[in-house]
Image (cartoon, rainbow, N blue to C red; front, side, top):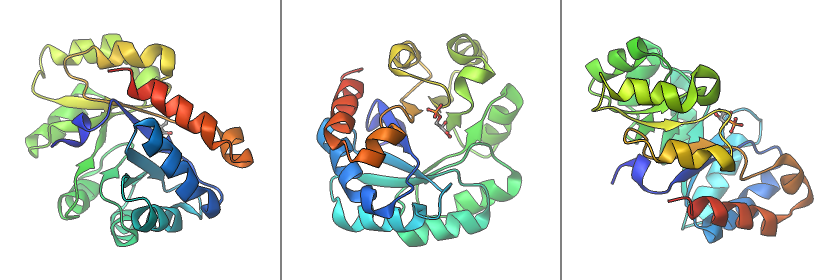
Amino acid sequence: MSLLDLAPVIPVVVIKDVETAVPLARALVAGGLPVIEVTLRTPAALESIARIAAEVPGARIGAGTIRTGADVAAAVAAGSKFLVSPGTTPALAEALESSGVPYLPGAATASEVMALAERGLRELKFFPAEAAGGVPYLKSLAGPLPDVRFCPTGGINPETAGDYLALPNVGCVGGSWLTPADALATGDWARVEKLAAEAAALR
Ligand code: 3PG
């Protein structure tokens, strides 16, 4: 099954404290969002991915903010089951293609989408979604490029997620609103689970 069809929302998570990784993943899974993207933006990211992979069997854990071949190797070695990148260079596309796991390469323009489609890639991350044009922009891409589907991410919130999910070329959306920094800092897992449950009900 496609990564885009497993859940309506992929939580994009920035983990500062590795001790929060497992409880936050459990809260997201309990709320109904099993696909979790941990961004490689903190020193705790790789160890967090490893712990979630080992200790939260219900989670489909992946790595985000993949920028280089080295990121691909480190993320897969840590136990990532999928990879997400904000944009895509030819070198990164090659590394993703040989990673052995599913991936969502980032694109934001018709030319970028077409370059990836030429490589046979038709499931992409659309980033930065709101800043790049949001729902009207994706609607416009669906005309000439109807065979490409997206996970838009960047600036999406609970109020706008439904509009994205209603588009024929959107499989799921990504966002960080499920895991607010203050909830992670105080260990408010009930709040994370509630936000996840509300997001899971979006479709
Ligand atoms: C990101 O890469 O930071 C994601 O797109 C999350 O964006 P958001 O914080 O605007 O949801």
